Structures are given as structure tokens and as C-alpha cells.
Length: 450
Image 1 (tube, one colour):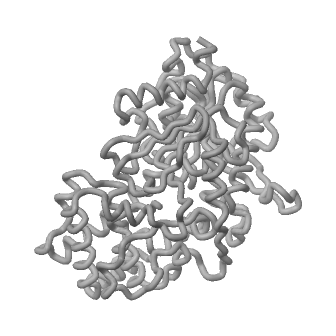
Image 2 (spheres, rainbow, N blue to C red; image 1 turned 135 degrees about the vertical axis):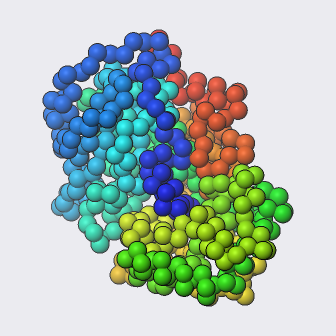
């Protein structure tokens, strides 16, 4: 699905596939209604919510907002109170209890920065960000992942909504990009009436994960034949220079004080990066300039190494980063499924069968068992019962090779032509952008409130 360069990975938790706005918007966006006066009582009201702790109020909120870092006490197992609790990290950008509220997740660690998602900007609303369980500081146990399921995470979101509706009684919209968009859909599957609508950006469906034919078809047809051949050729050259490049990779990793205990070796990590390079190239790039920068037959090993690092993020497969994303890979290995990539052109050069499988990133002492029914259940719900769902995708994004279908009522799948994984409503063609904005504002009750 997605594991970017270190810079891009950090950006993903902050921008969630591009859905975070670059600046704050006034609280009267799209409505013409003046912003409410500052709520001097907000600290007391937050403190009165059951299970909520104010960690800090940060000074860097934008105009018209106050920015809080919060903790919410959550059950480790929502079906068994005896399993104990953990504190889930939240952030709140508060403008007025009278405004709509946007429930936002990256699907990973919470970004502790004052930035508004696109739906929050369009609605001039409050924004409540939820850190996904087992990421960041929201960890029930360092080594027990048995309660890291999509249903438990959906129940986390349900409890967040139920708790904060005591303060924010108006309409709610959920949103997220990439894995965060998936989490937003999963929340709706199990608690369909918690929010009034959902905007999911670049969210993979992954229902067909056992043969992954959609991903293979996409990677064998995206771009031109020459584009695809250039990427396959650079993969071969990288593997033909494996000894020199792996030695450089291992030396750089050791110099940084890192190791490969989780994946197993620098050689295996290198092979994984090479295999995933075309997928990540199209996911995060794909422009004419990116295509022109793909190393050709005369490229030096230094140029090959630099391109692979920029494209596939070599630091991601060493322990420091890989350890932080064990929960991500665990979710892929147990419920969410994973991609596949073409390998026939590299068959004579590969050494590590199944290297790109999620199990490569989950330590062997953590039990893993895949549930083949989890994603088909989500897909059926979206098709048969999903309402007020908006999916915004890029046509050149391999992550949405398996895209969610539109729901049965007041739902749409809209595509940004030529775009990759980083899409927004603002990027849509004008007619689609107008339709998407109208859907969002209708869900948020603007036509009734005036």
C-alpha cells in the first residue's frame, strides 16, 4: 500500500495524502456566518468530558482556533472491560461548539501540528484528530497486538464521537487519506450513523488481496510502454549491481547506528526496496520530470543508489523506522491485505521469496493469522449499505487500483486525472469539484442552517 521515503512518510502523517490545507481558514468558510466569539469556557468543558485529559494547549493555532492535545481513556478490548485501558492521543482544533466537527485520522500516529484538513477548511468547522491504536503513544501493550483489529479501531472512533458529541452537537464529517481514509470507512461499516458523511482520499479497498490482480494490471498498464520498460530496466540494473549497492546500504545504515534485525539483512531490505520501487514511483511521482529522472543504461551506481533511495526510501527498511511501523504491517498481514508487483522480469535475480510480504516486517514472536473475510465484509457493506461516502482518487495512483465502489445512496467516487496518491477536492475537474463541495456542505447541514 504505502511506505514512503522518510521525508514523505513523515509528511503522510501530517498531510494524509494531501488533504491537509496549507493555511487556516476563517470559521465562516462557505457559510457567510460570522465566527462565534471565543469560548473561554472550552477548557472546563473539555475537562468535564468522561475519560478526557487535557495534555496541553499549544500556542500555534491559526486565527479563530484553539489547539489542544488531549488523551482519551479507551478500553484495550471494547468487548471485555477486564482487559484494561490505554490512553489514546487526540488533537483538537476548536473554533465553536456551534460549528460542524470533522473527525480526522491519518491511520497512523497523530500529527501534533496545527493544520486543517480540506473538509475542515471548507466547512469552517472544528477538527478532532484521532491517533490510531498501537501507533505513537496510543499503545495498549508493546508486544501484544491481538487487539489491533479494524473493529476495535472502529469502536475507538465510536467512543470518541459519543464522548465529544456532548460538546459538539452539530453535524459530524469523518475524513482521512490513504490508510486514514480506510479507517474512516471501517468506522462507518460498524457505526454507520456516528457521522453525517465521510470523505476518503486515496483509500485502497484491498478486497481482492489474495491474488492482487488489480495491482498487477495497474502496474502493467500505467503510463506508456516506454515508461514501464524504463522502470523494469532500472530494477534489473539495481539487482545486477547488488553486491556494491548492498555494501553501501549496509555501511550507511551501520554508520547511522541502525540495524536490520526485523527484516533480517541489508540484502533482503535492498531487494524489497527494488521490488517496490515502481509502485512507489507512481504513487508519489509519475510526472514528466520524474520519468525523465529515471536512471538510464549509462547511469553510475551512485545515480542508481540515489534514485532508489529517493523513490523507495532505504531507511524505511532498517529497524528504527520499521519498528515504529510494525502495527501497520501487522494490520496488512492479518486483515487489510497487501499489494503485489510484477516480478517475472527479475526472476533470475531474486534471492528472497516472498520478501515484500508484510510478514517480513513483523517480528516472528508476534503471531500472525490472516482473516480472509475482513475486507470482503467492508466491500459488501459499502456496496449494499454505504451512504454519504465520497472517495477522491488519482488516476495514476496504484494504491487505488482496487478502489472502493460508490455506496448506494448519496455517494460518489471522483477521480483527479493524471494525479497520484496526493489528491484533494480542489484538484478535481471543475464540475466534480462543484459536486463534491455541494455534497460535503449538504451533509454538514448548510442548506438547513443558512
